[in-house]
Length: 249
Image (tube, rainbow, N blue to C red; front, side, top):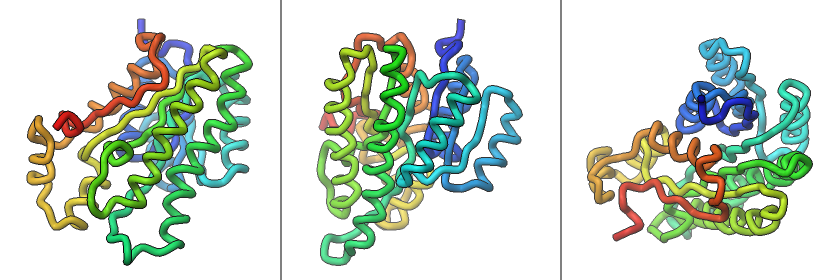
């Protein structure tokens, strides 16, 4: 039996990277998946490639409340309920403190923090109505430890970390679990961006981690699957590093 048979999931930022990998894995494990992305062209292409009646793409700006309402309503109309939410959408900005602008701050916080809040606001009541659900919020190792150039990104992911714990406590009585994942550098466009911004070769980025390499998208997706499934039924409010041992140093 597949781990997510009969479950309905929403995955934001699902047209690329970790979100796409998780979309594919959830489908393989029997879930019905609504995956969203700001990039309509990429999302529609993925939907066509998947060619799966249990996969539905919806264009979404996660910082727009009306978009969240539309995604939630469409999911219920199509699949009847919502069992899993993976708040995955986010952007990554590296910059020195004096060079950063309020506009950049607002842009990053709108997507990385407001986007997660709005997902929680509109999905948790649906889950509470049937007293069951699992939410996974994508934070980062930058949400736990500090590093130069990461004040904006770290602030946003630190907020996600704390919001996760608050929501976990608030909704535990409804049998809804809320957990956060904290990846290190994974082989995605964000790692490519970091390599260029920091002037560090990808292989050298991997050396930052005790396991000596960058993470694979599939390794993050499998961790999300664990937290989404009943295998983690007594786990809520945790922060799960997926970082090759980085935070253990």
